[in-house]
Length: 84
Image (cartoon, rainbow, N blue to C red; front, side):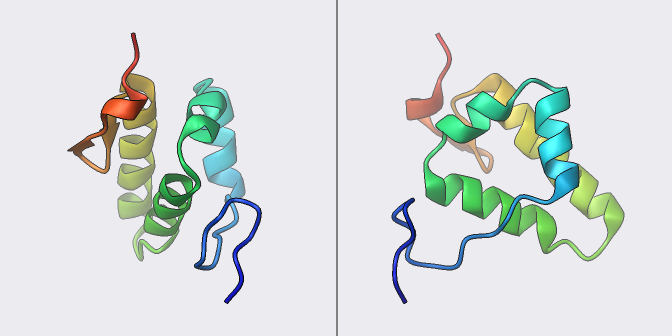
């Protein structure tokens, strides 16, 4: 499997419209794009794989909250994204 321009060696998940809209509405697209490609891909795959709409929305909210707060990735500390 070849890597895309992001350096990922696994399939890249396209951003669903509802996620893109939510990022834009909350003004978090730049924070999302500042994250490493693997984190962007993990977030999208995690959200999109939810079977129930309620779970999808909960995961989307968690991603948005983490991007807004900074310093967190999937409920784990992520010092590289901390906001000053």
